[in-house]
Image (cartoon, rainbow, N blue to C red; front, side, top):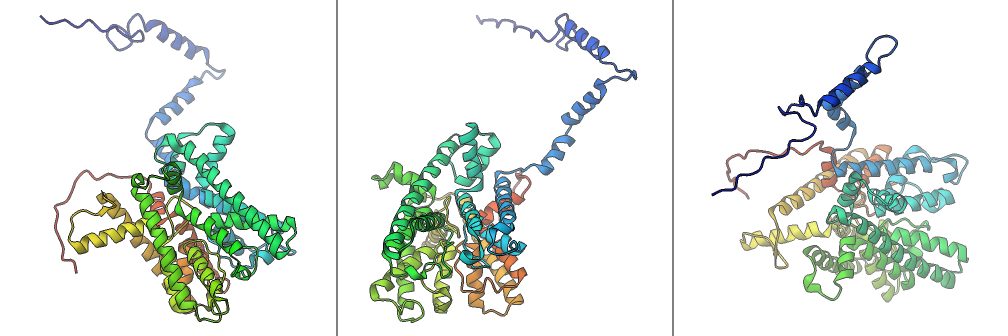
Length: 510
């Protein structure tokens, strides 16, 4: 025997025939009709007719499409729009007469260039920062560096957490995409963790620098504190802005200034995901993720290799390391290797270095630092993925294995896409600048890579470029901060999945 299922209870809002014409729905229909007659106007026309039309329009497909034209479709679009808005606000503030040391405000191009460089934590400038900008202008630059390094969407999310104690879905999506959070529920913890790390590193570095400025260089406490705060924010966010005309050349042999700044640059360049994991599992390297291992191994290799290369090449150059004592040469070579990977400080004259040193620095700048941090460039993880793909192909392997883990095929495509887009943008910008200027290829390539990698080092030609060339650098800084893949996703209005596949065929390679 089988149990006969009982009859399901009929909803109260529907009639016996299921269409809303039974006894239960009669009072509702009657009330609705009487309400429609009661709202008649003096002209005799039904007032609800316009509202009904609006409801029909909203229910149709045309109304959402009209709104979607003006609303972002992807979190990457919000990130791009957020950075653009921050650049626009910074440009407007720097154009105010109070922001410049002089009777008039800064020209639009100088203000735009400086604002973009600060928000994108680059450090390139068309003017002499400590001389050209007033105290207000330098404070604006400092705020723009902090907002840009923290992340525009992350900064907005932080304000929402601190003020409203609540986050919308759109804000959480944008902040998760920008901060590389593992899930929407972790956005709040990630943002607060980023804030804690940022404040801790910047406060410690500011205190160390201020004490050194007072003890060794005779700064007043107020000036020492201002210089300490400015350079600590600039260092941790890998910006490279300094309050000295020659950047940090006067401190080339001072380890109490160079080493703390280098430490802050390295910490900021590791990326917040790596810092979080090191905090949670400091003594268990076996459990570190592939991302953390790639960043740490790549950072050590690039620091050691870059320091050795630059020190060896420039050792006898009297215009750079040759004029320093042996110990100071090693310190300056190491410091320049650290800051070349997207920080932008310089303790030696970059314009007087050998062209082969410029080429080596181009490679370091192009690789950059860790993802989801304050560093720019191609990112160490992308370079590491390409390296292991190359090793696998040379060995004839079928799967790419990294630290006893296998890489998904999608990661291969993402890395190749980012690299090809980056190379195409750098090559196209270099060719364009060579056509409109008379500078040599080595200097132009260095300037282009420095802007794209948001490093900020210069051979001295940025201020001498024509307006069109400076606008190219502005675009490179903006794209370099967002990343080619992020900007490409922001420009795509929607994702269109392909429901079919073509037959496979293999071309000849090589």
